[in-house]
Image 1: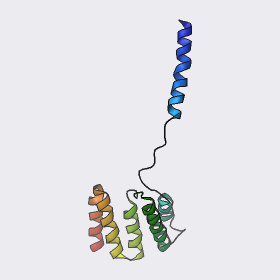
Image 2: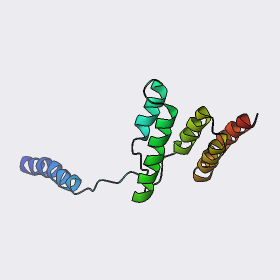
Image 3: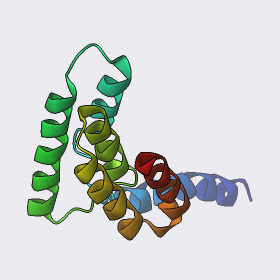
Image 4: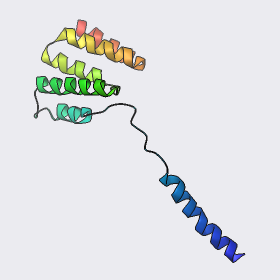
Length: 119
């Protein structure tokens, strides 16, 4: 009986190790690029100008499109906020509408921001 328990105790971890070693790494759903760094720099507020942040986000959009990777939720909303700070209301509307189209669950908040923009 002790040999059976010993074999089971040895084979179980070994088989688990073999099975997990064969697992493949899943690719991320969204192409995050440098988005998180850009949001961090936005909140630091003393590193880059709005125009530099807009340029970096637009460049990241092009890279993600070339890779076929969708942008994460909030990306277009953040870009719209940067356009608002830069005084480009037409681009704000375009980015907020894009965010609504890509992520319908954001529609109430995007509509709220669009209503505030029109005042």
